[in-house]
Amino acid sequence: MTAGAGGLGYFLWTQLPQTSAEGADSQLSSSVTSAALQSSSLVQNEEFALVLVNQEQPWEGSVPVLVEVEGVSVDERIADALRQMLAAAQAEDCSLSLVKGYVSKEEQDAEYEEVVAQYMQQGYSRIKSEAEASLVVQKGGYSEYQTGLAVDFTAETLAEGQDFSSTKEYRWLVRNCVTYGFVLRYPEGKESQTGMTFNPSHFRYVGKTNAERMRALEMTLDEYAAYLARQQGR
Image (cartoon, rainbow, N blue to C red; front, side, top):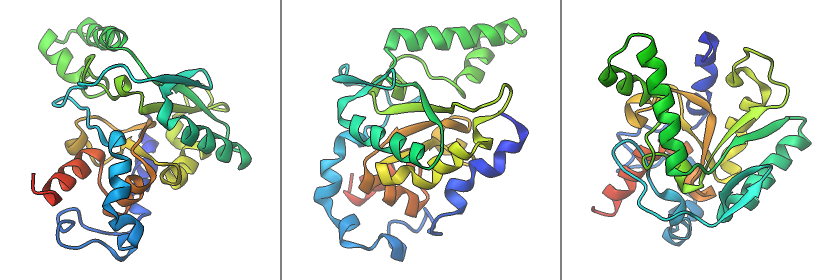
């Protein structure tokens, strides 16, 4: 990532209603007190999209039913929302392009081992290399790519050496993604919650209701899943 990416990465959180995550259990900000966001039925209808996969929580589902959107495979249940978002960006002269969607466990393991090998070539031990690699890529079975709910974007006009976070396409995404049920999965400043470094390209479908609520509460999916569990007394 380029050094100048920081301020843009935090845009998602700083441009939103200011609600403390610590106080979320007792009070929601006024922006999320609408009947729609309080409707448990809406959240339940989107429950499939809330599956949490990270370094501590493996993907335990089967291969989703996949369809292709602009050359990448995604869970068929998010295809329409993804197409609508891409069309809306194009209508506003944003040349968004998909570069990654569903990845099998085997392909994910191969990518992980490739990154580990790169660190080992720099003189790191195997243990240190795995620790460093895990900040940017997950092992197979511990990656959202296996769910079919995560996608990576780029800009067709991205120049060589330019970071995606410096583009108007990225800024459009962080402003508009929740309208289509997506969130920036690994925002800057949330590394301790996600276990991953800032990744401006990686967006995750969670459903429109959940995306709007996560934005208002300034929560990552990891934090939001824990918040819902507390609300439900689990």
